[in-house]
Length: 434
Image (cartoon, rainbow, N blue to C red; front, top):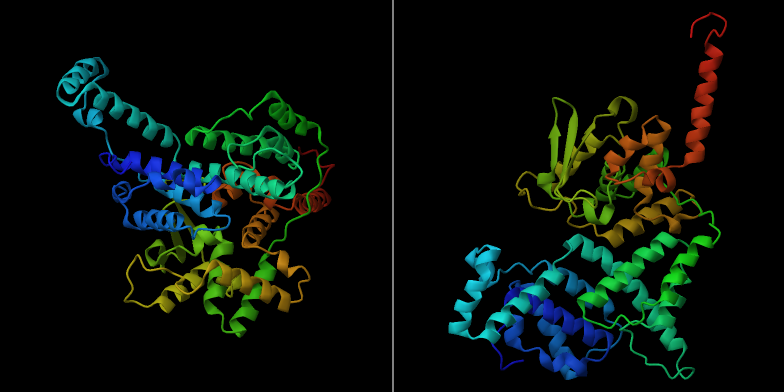
């Protein structure tokens, strides 16, 4: 490969990802020697090129050890966003009916092999770009899940089977075993689709995708549905107690982050902790705070959420006051792009959340995750009379997920029933009015 002309950036990004992934799932010796520094140089982003160069250097020196699936999959998903270069055909801006003439002209000067090879490279790049980067990240979850299972199963079967120990391509027997571990058929089918997609992108054999695999996935629909344990949530009262305790320990940034995360129903790692100063706008005259999110999980075009002051009823956890305090702590000399929480990592947030809840006497504090704030806010909104449509809009849910996962339906139904009964008791049923 080193003797060939450097590839186009989009093609290089795609093919280097393929080589890296194949070598990581199989052995470096099979393909590591195919990657040259000239190929890596064509990857535009310096950080990505450096990362690839590190992988290849460590592979060729034999110092790369252990399970590296996570890093390789992450690298592939990030590099996919760099596949943006245009082919010479696209640059010409020709209509489809003009292409045959263009091909003949190019072939006379560059050779037929060069023209056809360029088109073939474009096909490979288009296949890799057929989904958005966010979708590719979601597809990576299914691949990670299968790889982890396959690595464990292969390790347990050492000496018990004469089958190949290669993790990829997938094997029919391992895929069937993997599918049998799912309790939800929809999740299993989604992950199976993810696995198929990655086999297509990596040009790996799909002989494993048999009738037996499809029947196993279909059979999951007959499994009895288990009632899932209720996931922990931080209610508004718990938030007040937690903030009081955290402030007493001098954990101001965490307290402000918890308040903002609760009121804006934020995903802590991807929406709150990455927020910058310019995303937070306080309107003193209207007593409102606006949070501008450049992107959300189900809103790639971004979102703008507004919350009002609630000092009359709860000044401690008022989002407007929390936003003011947060901006004051960051100082007036900061730029819009500076982070709101420069010293608060996701790991630190979780540790403080759980230790604070434990100090409050919450018995299962270790089971609380960052989504506990979203669950608590969604449930509190439902209890206060907000519709599921409103809750979905506030939390950027694409469907009625809060109805089954985030909102405590039993409590909502109990509240609705008691409210309805009180209305009946107050009404005059014999007045003749309908």
